[in-house]
Length: 124
Image (cartoon, rainbow, N blue to C red):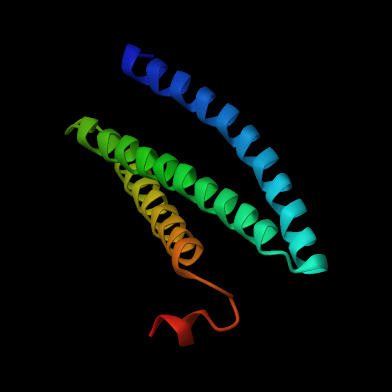
């Protein structure tokens, strides 16, 4: 295994730690969302929407990193790479791009959405 791959794995270890904190923040966000649904206090809504937006920003950046890493893997392929390696590298990039698009859409909704039920009516 080369140093670049080992470095990528180390970074992925940090990403998993970040995911643990994201899960904790999501639980906190859910708490404030429940409080908002019970009491309809604006401060609870602001807290859970802010936390959700921050979660989506971080996950979007993580997905962007994975797009970059998968792109680098494709660039590392050479004429000695097997068709299976080429196929898997391209599938990995496509999957990372799809996650990035999904993360971007969730971030967009989190920033611009007021209420999921009438979001499109308010936006357009």
